[in-house]
Amino acid sequence: MTQPNLVPIPELYVSAESAQKLKVEAGNMPSWDLTPRQICDLELLMNGGFYPLKGFLTEADYNGVVDNMHLTTGDLWPMPITLDVSQEFADKLEPGEDIALRDQEGVILAILSVTDKWVPNKSLEAEKVFGADDLAHPAVNYLHNVAGPVYLGGPVTGIQQPTHYDFRGRRDTPNELRAHFRKLGWRKIVAFQTRNPLHRAHQELTFRAAREAEANLLIHPVVGMTKPGDVDHFTRVRCYEAVLDKYPAATTHLSLLNLAMRMAGPREAVWHGIIRRNHGLTHMIVGRDHAGPGKNSAGQDFYDPYAAQELFREHQDAIGIQMVDFKQMVYVQERAQYEPRDEVEDGATILDISGTELRRRLREGLEIPEWFSFPEVVTQLRRTSPPRNRQGFTVFFTGLSGSGKSTIANALMVKLMEMGGRPVTLLDGDVVRKHLSSELGFSKEHRDINIKRIGYVASEITKNGGIAICAPIAPYTATRRAVREMIEAGGAFIEVHVATSLEECERRDRKGLYKLAREGKIKEFTGISDPYEEPANPELRIQTEGYDVDHAAHQVLLKLEQMGLIGLE
Ligand code: PPS
Image (cartoon, rainbow, N blue to C red; front, side, top):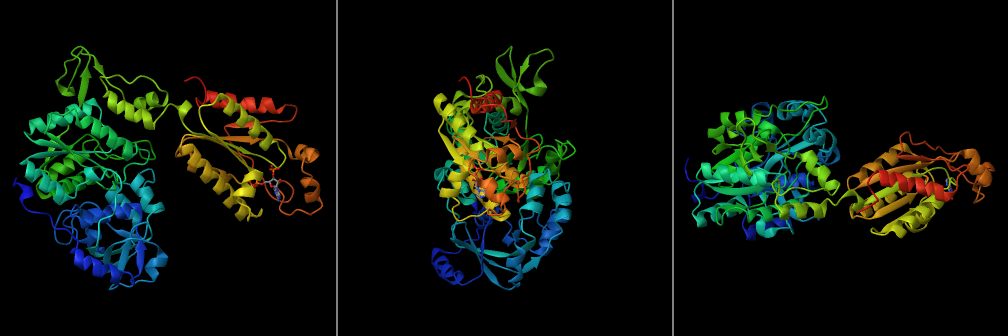
């Protein structure tokens, strides 16, 4: 294999002077606000990471890529890099026009000269590229539920790189990495692709892989988009930095790759290989189940665990980089060291901690042994995944007007504040309507807006480790579900149905509203002239008739304790 770093990889950027002129011209073009995934794709298109692509795929290239992983030029390319847009935007455009591609702040990054516009067969794309038209695959879900219905293709003229404020010193374009390797005199370099924190086994296997290939090592983690639910890249980069110190000095480099992964297993492995070749690497470690998306909707693996290695091997020459087999490293207790699994004799004691077990230990604040991971890595992981009794959560009361939601919510707030440890915010129905939603009425549309606002505020509080207590009527199941989804991304959600009957609420009529509603003086009144959809499976259902407020609040506390959200440190 030739030494690849003597020549630069072609980029799609114009000179600084032309960029300035083009930016002014682009101001008058139709413009498309790029999605986060499109920004990742555009960055790698422009800086040569996706060489030989010169823009977003045309229809003919797309068909070739989907069908047989080849462009019309005959070059190998396994992944559709397409610009998906809305129907509305596409309707206003004709091939032959130029459009400005903007980042989420509106900054113009590039111009796309549109040559092709078409409606893709997404089911076919899913089957061919991802192996199944199954929404359990994150990229298939993205394809059907996030991506726009129309694709635009054509060459890209690069104006400027997307801006990153985080870890700037650790990000390198392909040509920057090539120059770095050239400067250090590194001729053989093994890439390690990862989207997970590195523990001791990874450090052992990567170092061993590099040594066996008589090469240097590049830890090349993806920081663009990975699998939903992965450890966030801020935490991971701090972990990688900690592990970097564990390699012998000057053997290993760390560089961040702003790639949006698709979790496409075999095709993804080939794609990763091409991207690494473009970054000046000569070797890449391909592991068991490389870039695997997990289980399909029938509970089975999407891909055979060795399919990625096979496809890579088949196309190795065209990729232009050599595959290094991943050796599974295991900890052998008797010898207190890591060894390749296939070299350990029968009868030896092998210790391991699975990903699921690791997450459980982090969640519950349990010990993570030093043979498994470096203390510095564990410290970083604990900082972002504190045990449940230090994570944020939302208690969401729902029930009829006058059911007692606010009273119980107030009592609960005070009890949680008495315990201390986390800030508590009460988002009571009436209070929210005064401060956040004063312009809203009680139509279905307005109630939904109101509940989503409460959900948004509660999700921010939860994400940042606080406790949010919400007490609106929230009469619609679908809206409550949407709020749950929003909040569960950052912590726990406890739905509490205050199940006081309509008769009892009306009998109490603490605000005199039921009387007015019966007389028709208040319209769209929940339970009287407007619906209330009872929660089918709330975390807790409270009966208030015959019980006092303390008792109700105590039931919530017991539930929180049972869920591990409050309690002993
Ligand atoms: S919703 O449906 O969740 O947006 O309602 P919410 O924001 O919780 O507001 C309910 C309080 O507003 C008063 N109110 C009404 N409730 C229901 N229907 C109608 N038409 C209505 N008009 C005013 C009422 O006092 C509710 O307070 P609570 O604390 O629930 O009794």
